[in-house]
Amino acid sequence: MEIKLLKSGYKNEKFYQDFLDDKVNTDEYISDESVNINSIPDIPVYLGNFKKSSDDELKIEEFSTMIDILINDFLDLNEDIYMDELFWHSYLCLYKRDYLLNKYPEIKEGFNKFKLVVMKDFDWENYLYKAVLAAKYIVEAGEEANKDKYARLIMENLDIYNYIIKYNVSKNGNFVKNILDIIDETGLSKLLKSKIKDSSRTDLGKDERYGRRVMFEFNKSYPVVLSPMLDKEELKKYVFKFLSYYYDGDLEEF
Image (cartoon, rainbow, N blue to C red; front, side, top):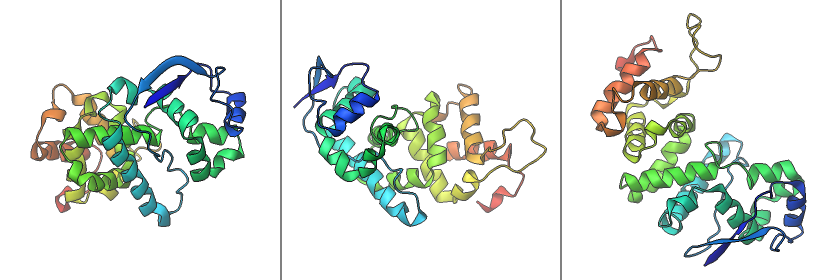
């Protein structure tokens, strides 16, 4: 299936209005470039509509669905395609308009909502980006059969996952898998998401979390500590070592 790509300069309110009016499949917006993919499945791209804790299971389910579709339909493409925001914006706006309007009716509220749901920059804040990387990590770690488990662990530890994917050194399937397994097996999730309240640590920001600082230490220690290459038990030792730099409580309970 040929997917035509948009011309540059489409991120404006006129394009948004033409999207609503079903007028973007024209020469005004479509370039001469295209890519070929196997199929064009509907794929959820936005989880910000799940706000309440009662919706957590729906959020996990949607995220798992995203990962499943990406593994089955997109990861066999060249990485330059599925890691490119132009591809995704073209795919969604030119081929998934009806699906998006039905699934995310808030798009009709205005241009800002459209940018948030559909046209968001393809970076660590974008749920589709998070899912693309998660799918890559799961395949790299050979854990396709446990896709749902790791989708859940990512969503339950999203703050830490966000920091993992912001550092290039930790963008490694085995590292991500091992970190998630360590958190799951030790019960560290609540502590790692907690705010550091030590008033004597004037070197830290106002909203520092233990998990963020642990990831910071992994990044800072590379290549002295080759964290992506460590097995789970060795990695666990460093998780507790780095955590002890900031947490003065008893870690023996974990």
